[in-house]
Image 1 (cartoon, rainbow, N blue to C red):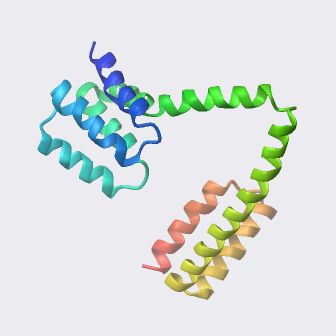
Image 2: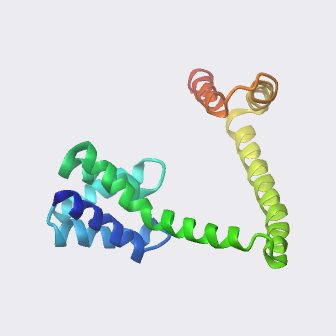
Amino acid sequence: MIYWEIFLAFFIPGIIGYGGGPATIPLIEHEVVHRYEWMATSEFAEVLAIGNSLPGPIATKMAGYIGFQEAGVLGAGIALFATIAPSLILMIILLSVLMKFKESPKVKLLSQIVRPTIAVLLGAMTYRFAETSVVDSGWAHSLFLVIISYWLIEKRKLHPAWVIGGSLIYGGIFLS
């Protein structure tokens, strides 16, 4: 029964507060504190503070913690799944509709419009990241990381996750 309650406690806020973020926090608080009484308001505030201090979506971090507190690893997994399930279900439905009409001229036009827009947004983001990197780390470190990353990914075919991990280690050693 606890697993079903954990699922509902995080699935319902995910549906009502679609899109996540701060809008779901009061909904999760209502379920966790008032409905199921798994923790006091002060404990929930501490979990929220911890979730806010870590990178990534707040709701998933809170779900993992609360699910683990109530029902161990399986509870954490169920809470995490329940948090992402509404978005996942909606994406599957929307993608199936999109795939059904992929030969439609309107869908093809949409794709033609979206691709360059995404390219421009990624380019702008890359520029801002590069600018921040040069300001925070200096042009020499930034240029070194760009060149070595390009070489490792394009020439050596190393997975980007390894390059990111190596860059974090490099930053920890040489930029701290």
